Length: 383
Length: 150
Ligand SMILES: [Zn+2]
Image 1: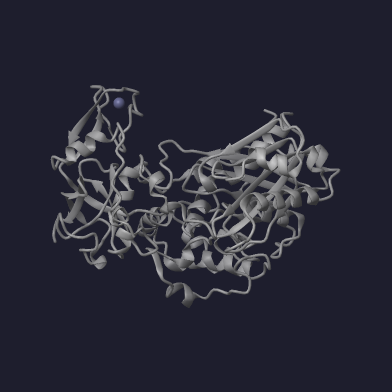
Image 2: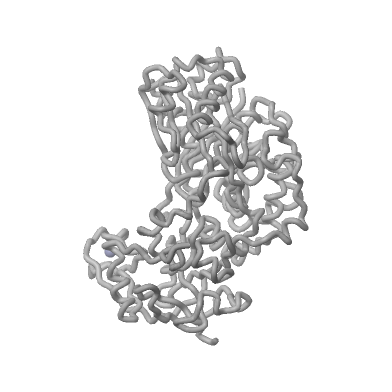
């Protein structure tokens, strides 16, 4: 099988400012991020012939293509399930470029979550099946749904709030090094964490991602073309999507093993195609809408055994210099919550060697999309 | 705040789930099971066909109404108004005694008609034995749960 291994590369990344109340609308933010990514790549907008984004993206490809001055578009794709779609946008474009359906692909996500309404407050869309089995009982928000799994996980495996704090702290520490992060110059302490207000016990304020306005984009071309681009290519080494047997989304309570989420399915496919394994990953950008997604993902992607994800976070393992530096831009917890797209761009920065929290000599990076929903993942490799 | 906003959310019932709610209205906890004699597997949430054998035949089997708490959360605001009014309350998952892999989201209450915050959160325990009770909420009969040993 020829496959996608190293057949394409990310050659441009772009982003807007991140904030709680950005004045510009989502379409404008999307265009800014896309044009910045193309400029970074040194590719003219008229050469773009492929787009990929999320089904929850408000700016559609027609509007975006028209606004930025794209050429004839021959491939477009939208991936469902919110934050589960982030890495799949790159995967779809890599497949399109590798199979000759397009030559220059742009993936993007633009969102005004910081100033807009909270999605869970829209009761008209949340009550049909399967929400009839959960919402009336007051399990209203993604935080409540994940907290339910977190409580069970802590009970079964002895994970603690200290473990969850280790995750929040690692992300915050990296954001404190990243001037673009919403939590730049806002340190977190254990005392702040342990005394924070609860959102859905056992999860407190700092176990939850930020609410952010902002947009990001990246540009994908063939590996051959990437060699002539302005920036050092970052190869798309392996890609995967994952929707496990019996999966039920965030309310995975009806699965035989509710704590085995989509990460396991995506990981099996991801590693099967890769030339290296979890031990060879230099830095990881793991989807962190909620802190408990990290231990579950560490287990799912094979960095440790079942039930060991909490203990894995001990001893600074997720910090720079640790066993697996995590979310080096600050992640969704402390840089920006733009449905995980910032994790993709941060992975590219690491492999270019330009992160604000650079892991020395980083050559491989795992990027994941939302665990707890049908998900996706990328293994990126530096040139 | 309008009148509709201070009500709890009512289930929007689909074709597959309708029998569950019809039986609940008769104070019965029934689960969908495959009606193929060779299979008979329970499934939840309800769906058109059996993931084990593909049969479209189903029946609704009466459960004992006993279970154990598999997990629980205690939500705090920001929440929808009706829920914020009783926060912090509990939402629990009950694993049915008759079918350990069938898990229902619900609420632990002091008695059928008591408020969602009527049990001290300190009394919530994974593994605690519970029993189903039924109550009317805005015209829909909802299953709720009480501790077997209050
Ligand atoms: Zn069957």
